[in-house]
Length: 299
Length: 313
Image (cartoon, rainbow over all chains, first blue to last red; front, side):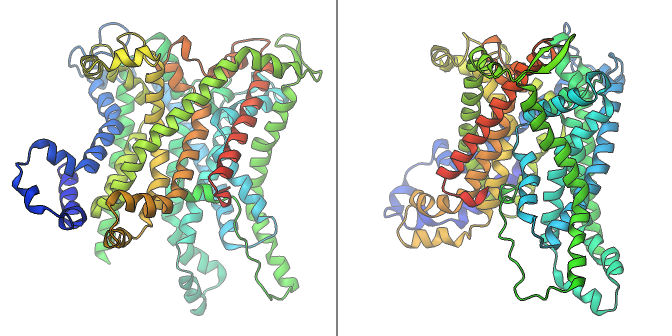
């Protein structure tokens, strides 16, 4: 937070409009500055800080509540500090099996949608062809459809073809790949659009075959975009509730388990697993940033 | 996840002028189709075809034990509407309120990050995305703790007599915030705020800050500068952000389920109930989802047309 206020001070000093052009600067400075004046001068920054509190509060609450020993079945009210749930995260029900199922589905959906979506992104950004506008609309639509529509329509497809009894792991994976594809295409496409086309030309000037150009120049340059797309689709898949609900049959992924838990009991372990997810992604991203900086320094 | 996301609709697709139509060129033109084939097939089979199967399911009749038959029973639509028009209305109202609040909160935030963020821009944008590093269901459950009766929020609102007012207009119930329309809208705003901020930020970030100085030089107050210069330039972000918020918000029912009460049922809950709990509800639920699909599409098209940015879709 100190960084944030520091930057707003710097920004405020850069924006002289209301102070310098004011007609009575003397009158303004002569008045004693109360805390309210400070708030008025930093209204935008204050609003931004409040909105950040709104955005981040649930994560903080989740982390704090993961150390709670609740009274009764619902971990909603703070009672007593305890590390029990952290020491035995798998103790309640099949909570870890549900998480395992979610991770398995996430990995399969990630691999498939990243491969298919990357191919499609190359086609869309490197080639001009007749059906391109129509394809663009088709790629955009799944992102613009409410999730419940995708879930409900998929349910009717599976119900009328393979029947509700055969729904499970693979129907969930199919649904997840479907809604991840568009996001992968958009992410990889924007990375491709930012590439310097002269680099590929240079490779060809140096007698690289198209294959070599692709493997040694294009692919390494697009790799960060592909990695981001893969992470995004993994995150979307692991966190999905609505589409999963309609395609799951009798399978219970972690989100389905959490949703159901609200009706029965909310153990502290749910917050523990949520906090673990948060810590793992945060360290992962911090690690990537540090690695990137180290690599940049070596150059 | 940016204004571009909304922008993918109709690209200019300029044809290369004066290029020779050699047979070799024609052979190369098959490559994009080969690269696209798996994705297109997937989307057609699992996105487009299901729309038709659900329209077909919506005019069927029967039950889970005896099976369903296509009898062109259009009455499913009128039944669904008369039974659940309240839920439809509530879904649209909540989504509308959510979009308005997201815009009111997202715009200052995006503006602050884009123009006052300085070298902390990337970090601040990362903070907007940090919440999504963990399950949105768990975060929604955390709101139950934040808004609980002995929590700080309820105490402050009570002391300020805000709850008396909101309860009078039916937005909260008594001295509680949980299990009320206000809690549902709060959860929705929380969940969808990043979707508003990201496109807003991308379009605000492109604006040259020197335009503000120019506005000041021409004797505009900061507010007038914003109204006459910044706002018009950021309109693509506003339209994109509101669309990316409204569309998922219409179909959302997790917030209504976890933070609402039996009087805040939305259409998503009804569809799930009819599909998964009622043994004869399959055709009715399909009809409900077809109505929801058509309504969302109509509203979005109307909005895009009114907003005057038809090139967005």
